[in-house]
Length: 248
Image 1 (cartoon, rainbow, N blue to C red):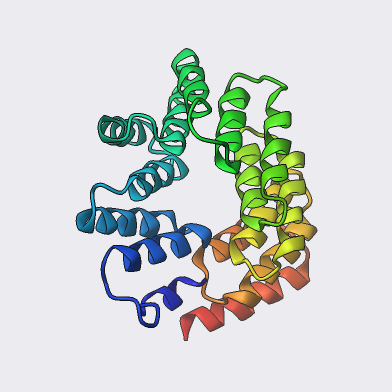
Image 2: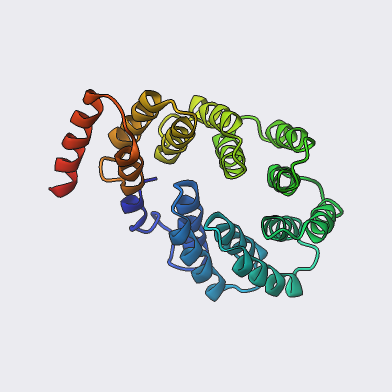
């Protein structure tokens, strides 16, 4: 959902915990991680005993690159929910990205010791392994997809993880799989453009950026990606057009 469509309350939903969780989820899935972080915090104000917004906060901080802050909030949450699998998994990712691999593996192991498994437990495990440059990470990513094969979100998150670790070929492949499942997602087109840019596929990146801007002509992230590209003259025609739209 474009950000401006999130301002109105979901029909029939009072502005309480469920309302803010709805906005947090929609913002997260739109790649608006700062907005999602704020909405998870508001949900916690209504119900601090729900582990979901605690976990959401930690995950958004990780997406924003605030790993120490993510660990701090994970520690606070784990005082109340010491066996919450996805909270343990999120802390594992924060630790791995901070370079504390031994502790990261311990928390990742603990996340699987509880009830069942989820795609996020496996993507977080892959994140921890990729931080250590271990090839077993690919099995974990495949396992995540197996658990939720029809979900574009899983492929998008896998793309983001691969991109973070400089695996741009794998990141692009995952983004393309996400688009095959839902081509209306602006943030996935942006992700594809970022991967293509890193691989030197500038014309393809421009096309992906154009798709993103067709879906949301005022998307600042898409405009920023397009502005960085050094491509052919038709691309600059597109840029002039969308700059004019943005100024209106």
